[in-house]
Image (tube, rainbow, N blue to C red; front, side):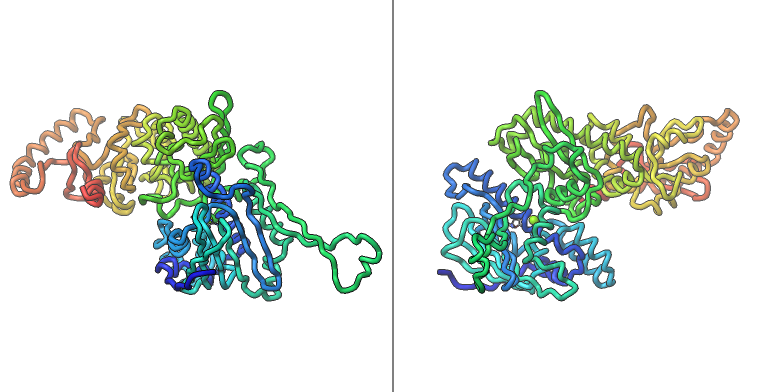
Amino acid sequence: MSGKVETHEFQAESRQLLQLVVHSIYSNKDVFLRELISNASDALDKLRLESLRDGDLDADTSDPHIALETDPEARTLTVRDNGIGMSREEVKGLIGTIAKSGTAEFVRRLKEANANKDAAASADLIGSFGVGFYSSFMVADKVTLVTRRAGERKGTRWESTGEGTYELEALDEAPQGTSVTLHLKPTDTEDHLYDYTDVNRLRQIVRRHSDFIPWPVRTTVESPAPATSANDAEDGDTTATERTVETLNSMKALWARPQSEITEEEYKEFYKHVSHDWSDPLETIHTRAEGTFEYQAVLFIPSHAPLDLYQQGGRRGVHLYVRRVFIMDDCTSLLPNYLRFVKGVVDAQDLSLNVSREALQQDRQIQLMHRRLVKKILSTVKELRTKDNERYRTFWREFGPAMKEGLLSDTDNRETLLDLASFPSTHDPEQQTSLRDYVSRMKDGQEHVYYLTGESRARLENSPHIEAFRAKGYEVLLLTDPVDEVWVEQVREFDGTPLRSIAKGQVDLDGDADDKDRAEEKQRADDFEPLLARLRDALSDDVKDVRLSSRLTTSPACVVGDAHDITPNLEKMYRAMGQ
Ligand code: ADP
Ligand code: MG
């Protein structure tokens, strides 16, 4: 028995995204299976957790597993799980809508790439966004999802061809969990590799992409039954087949295995499962601690920043396990906010399975793991800088602005963070510099690390403030991230050398001037005083003071801030934040 069929429209962004996916030329179509298995695995994790927390939950937890069912005649593949399932509203919200932040931006860029017929760019974009469930439409022209949430009586059927609408129907009966049935696109002869009803193909894909999934991924294999007697074998038209259930994955928790036995490929696949990212990680950190607070962790630094890194509400944090049992995703207590781009799994030995998000923040063990993991991540980046500078530069390009937030919030590691940082400077138009290298290039008599903050490098380079420094051969850091305005106010020095804005107050460039120079200076000041007085008068509403300056060489005048004034860029940032 079932209810009436309703037709709904996809939310606008989802519709656009689907269109792009349906017509995508994403080359590795196999990944749709990884996505569906990954979702099924998450659903089984959630069921285990919810039944642990809620003893009254009316759910079947007797044999959690994922099943792949094929029908070569009908050309369908079904991925079935008996996990948490979805309510009708969840189906609408999760499958009919893409809740992921950054979607609009992604769709805009993908359209642009497609308009330019830039196949590589569009594949890259899809890869770096990860389209999850919607990747089904790369291989199927119709997808049917049947689901029932654990503890609920009614089920829901969702069906779509990916065109613009989907159907919803209430079902009086449905097994607990979710099944996703793909009506596979016809394969042409060249596409014989994409026969996803072939068990051998499925076995191969699961081993490759989903081996570590902690739940059994099963399929039924049909093979000719061994003949029991000569008569049976000769028995003409009924070929006897034997059906056996095979588990396709090894189910071993990757982080618990010895590092030496794990291949690069396995780490990469694991990363894709935990991060929902389709591209390879930049760096993998596998670490463990023994003794009083035992834990194992596999952490990843992605190779690109997510589109929502600087927005509220994106996916944050790592997955927390306790003795192999999944406890929560997006666990933000284990790492500081500025490292929110780090993905992975932390498995703790001695935490309670019932620990709540709130309790986590107070937990002494969590705090200790937090401290150690941060140290480990920072030392990894430091190592990257010396051992593989190119990858370090990718890291800094993608995550530098986030790392600089750490200069403000993580005072314990400030020195290390300063050491890790890179900044554009007048020394080299292409390469950024470390503070250490800056200091090593400082001129005799130069007592400060000079910097200028502003909107863009081009603007800063043309700033009149810089002239005198350029003339003297002093290097100036050109800081253009909004966060730069803030950290430079807090971090006053690097390794004993004070940082100094060249746009603020009086910058004494003449520490080495001799007495004769000083006398000349004095004379000049006296000569100009009447002019300065008139200017002061005329500009009294707009500026605090008018001074003679030694910092200009070709420009006649410039506006400077007081040593403690906020800079124009910061003023803009505060205004943007509504302050
Ligand atoms: P993501 O996994 O990155 O969240 P997906 O597009 O793969 O994105 O899935 C969207 C959401 O739909 C999931 O977050 C989950 O809430 C829900 N979902 C998908 N598949 C299942 C499933 N098999 N069981 C329960 N919920 C599911
Ligand atoms: Mg998913």
